[in-house]
Length: 445
Image (cartoon, rainbow, N blue to C red; front, side):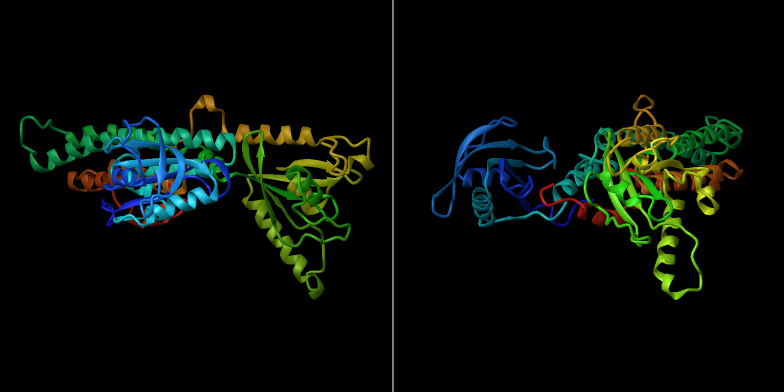
């Protein structure tokens, strides 16, 4: 599955735009070595940094006093010849080097994700590892980074390959029954003998799927819907947890109309807080309440979607009624404005003074950690909806195969299982995924 531009030599910054101590420019392709020499460098020993005074080949003007590295293919990230320029991180130096490279024949600026795409095309990374690389770049918390690193290390790919090997052996048995039903080396009753191994393989996939969606939640963030009556201090609590003024705070009831989303790093765990409109009884026919009714509808929708409901009550009125009482049954109840009710019982906090906030954060972190599971149990294998869908398809095909008694039909279901597993690592049926996935990368990766 080679890219149609894989013979081009590409270059791009591999570090973010701006002023920094060091900036890196990466070059990949058959002209990478020539690019080094054109800018005044001798090819250094492979994978060893060498100091070089870079010059503009157009006029010999100095560009930088830099470090350069040389990775001859196929022992490189992309599988091609790769050169790296480690420059002083000023805009002027970066601009000068990029301009010099742009004037070299056969070189062009890389497209987003093109370095990773070439690594995939060269077999350096499977599709699950490419996705893990994207997740690692986007990781906001320690646990997200750890999960992405585990995936980048091939934990999912290795499991999928083991599943595929078993499915291939089963398919070989089915095809032997089809092609050589009377041969002495094909044991009789092969169809009956395949039932138990198919069931066992289906059970292995089911055990992977039975993970409570931990990997997806960790990747996307554990969602917490902040619910409660108007003026309970939901927005103030959101701001206190976010440590910034993310939501407008007012004593006027109904200030929050739409859902406000804030992402937190809570003790290394990714948490997404949703501040929602206050829930109260209003006239369902009064047109003056139309916007507030829509806000409450969205609040209830978020409550249904959230991984955790955080019900915020005024500590002076700690006993909810009606809809709020129903929500309290499966929510973490927080009594806000504890500064106005010192005798409040339960998880009492003050968004105004900060009292009790550390306790609330610890409680939230414990709930999230329990839901996501400990690292001792191993990293989650399924981190994207695409992986889960493919595994579910493979599992369904195996269950269909288990219930069949015709070798040809069993073989077709086993092929469907293999095709589904192959989609995870990019062996088949992923062309519609590739452009979207690699387009998510920054240029230079």
